[in-house]
Length: 151
Image (cartoon, rainbow, N blue to C red):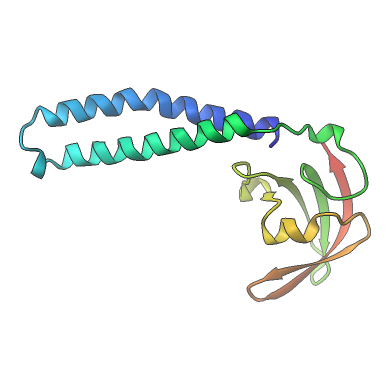
């Protein structure tokens, strides 16, 4: 995981831990309204608390088990975790850039893709000049690796 990815997880955890007491207040207030069997506010707040507690546990586990990789110190010619890869689509000539990241760091709007995704798996261990085929629902996509950089 990159430091940026770890920071995002920590920020999400902080938001959820701040939200938890608010949910507990909502549960208490809903409970004070009487009959819980027909109290939609109570049931909604309990469900939100369960979802929040589950996510907090997931985040704490991920943060506790995180191993930080500084992509700027990786280097080399091969595409690995943390690499930013410039590709040329061999079918239409269009060029795109992707960064290979770990779980919890992917963001399709920023072209940050998981190393475990079909694209990530296809790119791993290739280098500049290689042609890569990526399985896609409508057939294989073909790319040429134009550049690889780290950091």
